Image (tube, rainbow, N blue to C red; front, side, top):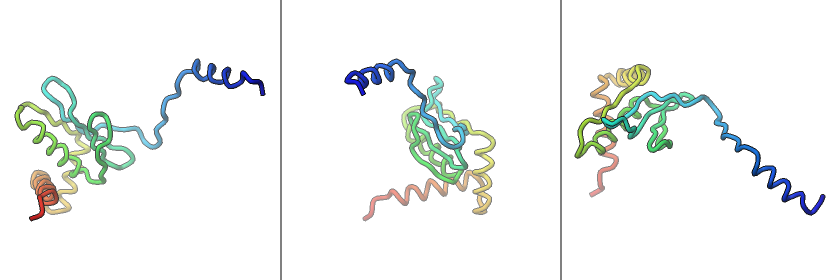
Length: 130
């Protein structure tokens, strides 16, 4: 091995194009989007490999098997973000709504009732202990 082989190897690597990161599993499929009136996305929900993902700032913030839970998290974000503003829009795919409605029906509730129950559970879980 020559004394210049490392320099040549480093130069070759520098000249080669960067290889993209290859993700394993199914591609990410957006199912819901929470957006401001100007079109800027605040949060989103996606489905990958049968798992629902909550996306904030382009990164996965939470994972769940429950479509209703991811919808409840998006509604919570909308309420927190819109405390002083108006006009946030939550658009959901029919697949997300159907999956969440199926979970609600399994608990003998309508979808709005089920989402309200999930929000109440979140409040109870995060309530300060006295």
